[in-house]
Image (tube, one colour):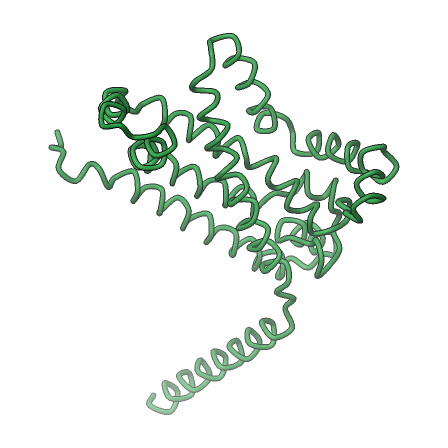
Length: 253
């Protein structure tokens, strides 16, 4: 019995070591460029959306009802359109066969289609509404008396905005920033239309998953899906922690 138990234990150890070796070989042979490209694209798109979304939200909040309705509709449109439709419009604008795209390349040497710049542009356009909507909602919930009090103290409008409005809207803006990063990093439709899927150049995680599934490589696809799920979970966890930060002193019923 002792020999049998020892044999089973030894066999299990060998199988575990074999699996570890196989996993190490899999990890060594893996192309990590989709993760790096996705992270870089997500960071740059988030920075652009952060400042653009805050500026747009400020202008919309200050606008009149009719102007606000029109501006809000235009700025929110990329969020409700299918990403491939948004990518199609971007392709029409920045294609070298179109006047604007040709002028951009001819005068400044800037090419958008099938480049990493195309990834950034597409991801920014798709993720921008998330930043804008969160910032606008946060701005609309700010107590106007705080702004009035700051004005009576002689603070300039720019100082009031960055030292009073932004800190007061901090949780909403931070949530929008996190959502924007997650959306930009996982973008597929618009980036595929505008930037294509060039390995090591424009190929992001979502595009990699689609490509390896077409090749029947479900192991690699499963690995990248797991990476996306981990990132998504971290994003939701951070948002929940931010959202519950102000509820520490509230009584529960």
